[in-house]
Image (cartoon, rainbow, N blue to C red; front, side):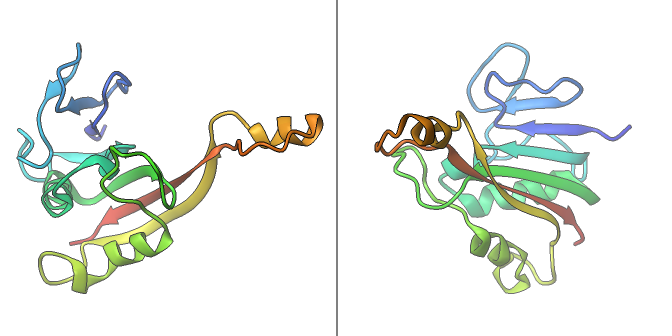
Length: 156
């Protein structure tokens, strides 16, 4: 069975995974992705980064570290808010163009492609407020937030 890593887990621990966050919560490894993870190169076959990449200050360092600890042929699943966001704690936003740039060898930190796209989808998460508005005819700006999920396979 492949080793699994859940980066930025917070209190949402994934059973069967090594859970990591920079804040100390019970049951996880404390580490900062931007400063380096305490794992050997190519230690994991699967990495989940759910709603954390939008928070990192140095995306280049975080991206390189994820690449370092994921084995070749391993999969990275990223979940982030989709599009512009008014959350002051978010350092960046993501959309389909963002994913294309991450796949472009010219934007990688080293020569050659790092990733191959396996899946890309936009979905709603949270309570479906559109349904309430439709049936109660409320004209208020409520809505489910959209989430971008993409899965990459490490090739380089």
